[in-house]
Every structure is written in structure tokens, then in C-alpha cells.
Length: 114
Length: 113
Image (cartoon, rainbow over all chains, first blue to last red; front, side):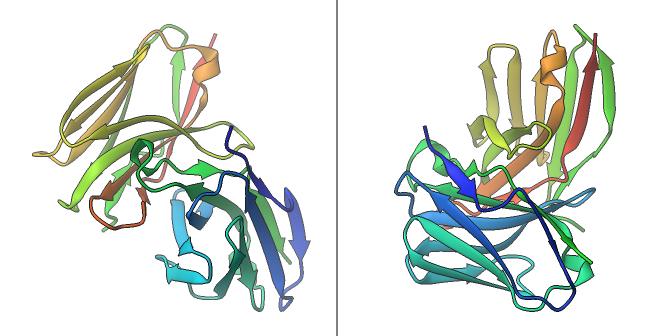
């Protein structure tokens, strides 16, 4: 079974703090994604990566950066957290060419910025 | 206008009812269409996927795609309380898109006994 794990289920940070969200997958997937999920807005893509050290902006990259130094790990960084970044953050991974590039999701990190 | 529109509900039905969930989209490049199911406090899981137009059936679930109308549907027959979840439609273009998906807003479904 594919497993995608995220470092924290719940996180509370203060405005202006630098925040790191970690995601690890154990199935050697090339593609990894970071989304945020907000009520009424669904999942919105922040960044994705299709290989080590490669990254592409998604639909809402402002205020975020990412790092992918190893194939299994994809980190999302909030350089200076703001209250409007309070959200559920979901990481996903996929292997190109398999079952329609099915994305496998982690359980999510609920981040609250005070 | 969002590329993918989905009625967020919430939708509440009695056990045994037929449920219809729908999405419309505007991007004619979309070729792959998916439905994800998300239980409370969990990540989404792929429920069904369809390539191009047509129907696909899996047990109590049927996915329909009408590309001419840019409209997709998910039908759940004989709905069960265990079907209570958020249902997200998702779609992507073909080619080298790295599997990038565009999601609808999600519909919250409750099936009560």
C-alpha cells in the first residue's frame, strides 16, 4: 500500500513565524503535490514537483516555497506565516503512467496561524 | 469563473436513496475525470476515474462524463451511512501535465439511517 505521511496533524503558529510542513511517501513516486483545502473552495494546488530539486508553481504559490532534496520528501515552507494561511494542508504523490496518475494523499495538517 | 464548478451542498439523504453528484467545467482540454471521496479527518481517496466521454460502473457507483456538455456525474445507488463523506470531482488534461489535477469545491454528503 502506498503511504503518504505528513509530519503533524495539527499545528499552531504565530504570525510572522517560519513554518515547515513535511511530507514523505514510501512508493518511489516521481510527482509530489501540496494543496490547501478551505471550505467552499475545494483543493487548490500550491506547488508540485516532478523530480528531485524540480518544482513548479501551482495556482496559489504566493507566500509559500517548497523544497525537494530527496525523492521521497517534499517540504512546504511558509516564509512568514499570516492568518490567511490558516487552512488544511494536504500532500499527495503520484507515479506517472499508472492508473491515470492516481494521486495518493496524506491525512493532512491543520494549521492555525494566530 | 472557476474552471470546475461543484455544488458544495450539504446533501442529506435517507439510507437506500439514489444520490446524484455533479460537476461542470469550462476547460475543453480536460480528458481525464475522477471522483475522490474524503472521510472526515482523512485525505481524499480515488473512488472512480473515466477517460473521455462515457459511463463507468463499479458496484453501487456509476460515473458519467458528457464532454459535449462539459458535465460529469457520480451516481450512488442504495446509499449507505458509510457513504457519508465529502465527494470531490477532479479532472486533468492529457499530455505532459505531470498529473496536475483541478478539483471542484467538494459536496458534503450525509446518508442517515
